Structures are given as C-alpha cells and as structure tokens.
Length: 266
Image (cartoon, rainbow, N blue to C red; front, side, top):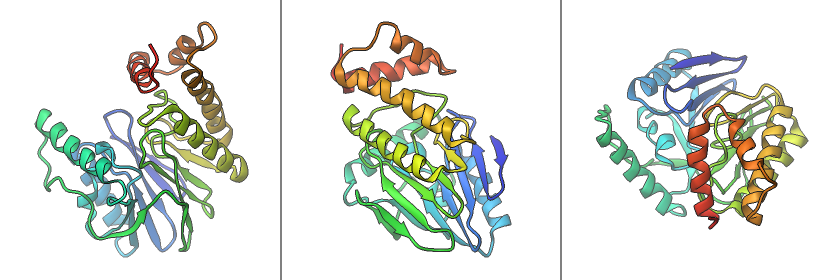
C-alpha cells in the first residue's frame, strides 16, 4: 500500500487496482471514505485513524455498495456511517455483500470480521442532495451511472471533492446502469467543479487531481466517449485512441466491451 499525505487529508492506495481510501481531517472530526481491499491495508488505515484522531468524531462514507468499497466498514466500529440507503438500494447492497463473500472465498482471504452490511446508519443517502452541517460541511450528491447507488461528496470549506468511482486517470468509465445516466452524472460533476474549482479531486482509482482543470479534461474526454456509446457510432479511430490514452490498456478494453453490452452495441 502507498500512502500520500496532503495538508488536511491522507490517501491510502491499495496494492490492487490503484484503489484510493481517503481520510480527511475536518478539524474536530474525521471523514473516512471507502476503506478498501486487503485486510492488512484496511487495518493499517484503522490504526492510522485511531492513533492520529483518537478523540475525534469519526464518520465513515461508503460511496456505493460495490464490494471493494463495502468491506472495510466493520473495522471502524466507532464511526458514524454515511452510505446509500440499503432499503432503497437493497439489490445493490445484497449484490455487494455476495460479491464480497465470493471474492474472499475465491482468493483465500480471511478477515478478522464477518461479511455484513452496514448497521446503525447515521445518514442514509437517497437520490436527493444532502447537506451535512459540521465544522467542514459536506455536500453529498447522487451520481448514478457507474452504479445506481453511486454518491460523491464535496467539502466546501476544505475545497475537496471525493468523486467515488468517477474521474479516474487509470481506467475508462465503467457503466453499470446506462450511458445516459452516466453522461448526466458527468454533467453534475462538471457543474460542481466549474463552480467551486476544488483544490483536490480524489477519484476512487488512480491519481489525485491537483488541479480542477485536470478533472474537467477527464470529464470532457469521458463525455465524448459516452456520447459515442449513446449514438452508437464514433469518429474513426476515436475509441482506440481514447482507450490507449490510459495506462492499463487491456483492462480498459475489457471495460469497453462491458460498456458496449450495457449500451446494446455490437
């Protein structure tokens, strides 16, 4: 695991899929976002939080119920949980739990806790925009497309955007619902980034964007790609050039084939 320290937040990057788990110092409280992948990595994040923020109020934000974002929560048993409402997004929650169990079994992973869904949720997120007022303020907003239950978070006083599984510089968009919803969520991101010009944009996978302009360029290119899927055709060579612009080309080709099926393209 790689650790990247910034002024008021720390990013823990997993050894798998360049997955980011973020810990944000909000003054008197701390926000933990999507602690993920291997048991030793999640425990290391927990120990960091306990050692550095022992007496802080702790909040745990799960951006969506994909299994790689779900399975860290039981370690943070003193944190108040913010996540998609499991009653509204019941199918996604159950699927994430089953995928968690299957992945661990297939890879011989033993965790020091049982696979289970979040309980005693402080703030169940719905499709509406939700503001949580504290010393930093947090604006949670729905961004379906990658999944139907995807949420992102903007911290205006710290000028940080937690993008969930969007705006990655290491993989092309992964569409879980349909390209139209994904395109709409990109527009939402574009509006928020253009309006607030966040100092940092933190995707779920890949590098932290140190300039809001970098994030807008990711969005611009992704919008062109998504529009190709919606229209069913692209300028000659566009898709190949777009995919080759990412460092893990074979993985992006696999994602593209998945996106074509979702979009009902041949």
